[in-house]
Length: 159
Image (cartoon, rainbow, N blue to C red; front, side, top):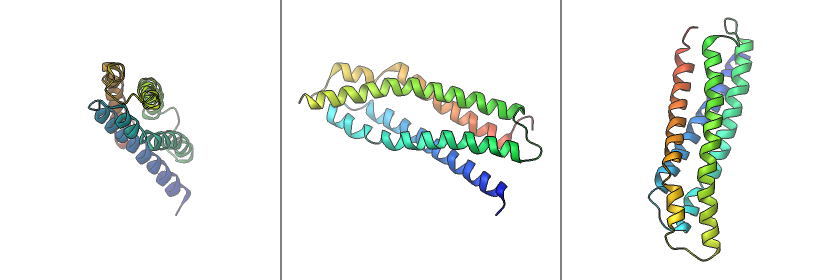
C-alpha cells in the first residue's frame, strides 16, 4: 500500500470514529430526555466516556490526516474552497460540542450528586437540564454540521 492509501485509510477511519461519536451522543441525549431517576441518568451517561474518546480521536485524526493528505496529494491545496469549508465546519463542530458538553455534563454531574446524596427520586432540576431546549438545538446543529462535513468530503465542491 502506498502512503496515500494509508493516509486516506486513517483519515476515513478517523471520520468513522467522529460520526460514531456523534451518533452515540445523540442517542444518549435523546434517551436521557426520557429518564427521571438520577441513577438511570448516571448509568446512561457512562456511555459518554466512549463517545468522548471517539470524538477526540476522530476530530484530531480527520484534521491531521486531512491536512497531510491535502499537502501530499497533487491537485489539492490547503486553500482549496472545500478544504477551507472543512476547517470552518471542524471549528464550528468543536464549539458546538463544547457548548453541548457543558449542558449535558452538568446533568451528569447533578445526577451523580443526587445519587451520592441517596436522593434517587425524580428531580425537577435534573429533568430541566436533561430536557433543555438549548442542549437539543445544539446537538441537532452538531448533527447538521457532521452531515455537511460528509457532503463536503464526498463531493469536494469546487475541486
